[in-house]
Length: 339
Image (cartoon, rainbow, N blue to C red; front, top):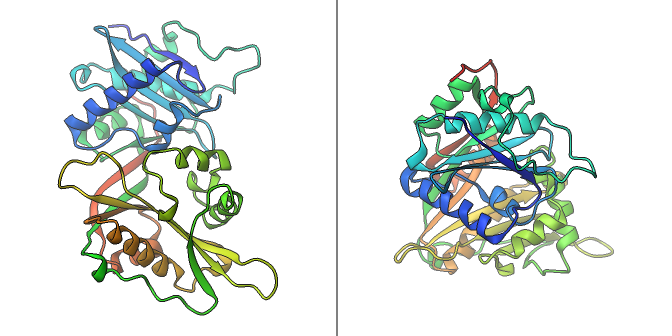
């Protein structure tokens, strides 16, 4: 069956299209036990520049597959999902090939409306990924994703670990004692935005996603229904003259709409600026984040960390975290096999 893949750049066209993507992702999560799209692609459904490309394909009157290519950063990245009822028919392979083709294209010109509205070209139909150094996330490291990657000539280049630990009550997780000269306070929207973005960029200068966040990216997250400024804690150091210096932060997240009896929270981000690294502040901030989550009634804490970030992994293991799952990122190493 010929696969028609429509694509366009920027945010999705309308609320109906956005709802269709969310419905598709929810169906896949029910089937697989893991969400197929991470936070940034979901934010990009409404807030995106022309560096973001959406690819959609319909079968039997419903959205059967979706992929998103984000060209920002050092290398383009993609995430894709196929509706369970339309799997094992080559649709994922075609989406991956089309995503690679889109990743290889130059940015759209002022005269390009960013949407061809037509079936994908033959280069996209044959399933052969393009030459761009596209990196593709597979959440949960599922067998089907491993098979698709092998068929298309992709290999694992990065692992993102999902760690978890149980939490007791607030008495089991007291706020940590701060060294002299340091103070911990809540983020103030509109006052701390620029300072947080600068500190985040310093702390994650080598991180391909986190380190590139802008004020607009921060604002997109603060508009989410889970955001609570009290859960974004800033660690400041007093200076001899002038304002205190932001040296680190811990951002916590308690998702809304959790099932009855479930109370899970996330250590969303822990960052320490380079000038303050090596002082044990990462452990202190992790403890502060756990104390805040425990005070909110959270019973399980989760976090995400790159598998090759050995110091951070050790810090979290010492804090009682164990592995729950792993997400993997693939990059092309060989030419894929045709359908």
